[in-house]
Length: 410
Image (cartoon, rainbow, N blue to C red; front, side):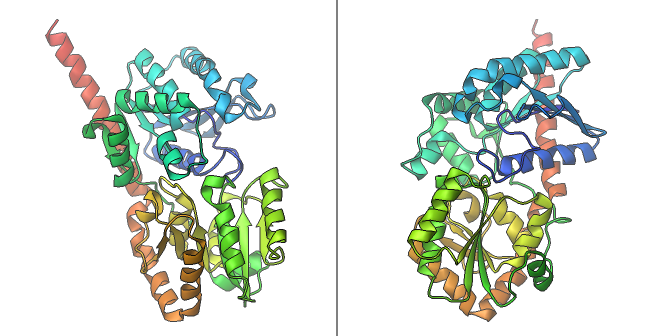
């Protein structure tokens, strides 16, 4: 098959953990790599984000990344809706110049989904879409989050018109069906994969040495974008509630170097008199993440909304338990009290209490760690990629049967 992978607003080559760049980048790149390993051809279409980047980058013999629309560089994400038409046009220009036909369009996020609807119709190719997040669910999870009206309208259109929606959890699938009155047959629940050749436990002493961490310290970690809906403020509240533990340090890894959000969070730690106990680190390479996970005692995911939470799965694969908000994504991964903890979103007191239980009970910690490998075995990318390819093939078969039926009736 030849697949057009649409990731309009976020280029997979950008560093995950910065303002508008997160797990979607990693997910899209991992899908492309897996499809390439199965001998499929993949073209990833994204907006240009840097004038220094080549317009076409050959990532492997079967995978290309194509940057489009130089005029979009620096445009805020909420204004990118005005660039969808030019994004579509440049993709079609590329396809025509290359004289190729795409068998499948797989869009990621609502901006790409809108383009996917139009390109799918133009090419007569099935459209598979992954939402990643939705306006309605984000707004419901956190009242201060307000998406532009066009987003909800477009997501409804995608849910109703895409040939297949890939969701990551049963809860996400059910929520979307209720929101948009979509047919259940249009949904396939396929979680995000984890490359267990990369994400596996490293020796803690060596991992701590790599990051210059005192072997005697207790370390909790926040990893990801510093978007308020991700709960960075909650993490600092947790650190403040645990300040009586003289041996505990809190790491915050993510955000732009010296960016406004990072500076504001640093000021908050100063106001709370915990600045010496909280360490801010800029995003690190994906290849270094397993070492970081292995170096800390527990990952903290205090998000108000997570459709999956890639960091939760990666941390568990790396042998580090997770305490997370009891929301869709983490709840699908963590067995509360057995492989980690689930806490009501925003409840800093309960987060702190559970973290202390974990740190103070070595036998509980040991049992959790031993359970982790089997708990995420079903997320191995080789298994996940087979399910995604099966969806593609099913949609191609449906499309072909429909064409045959139409020929017979004309």
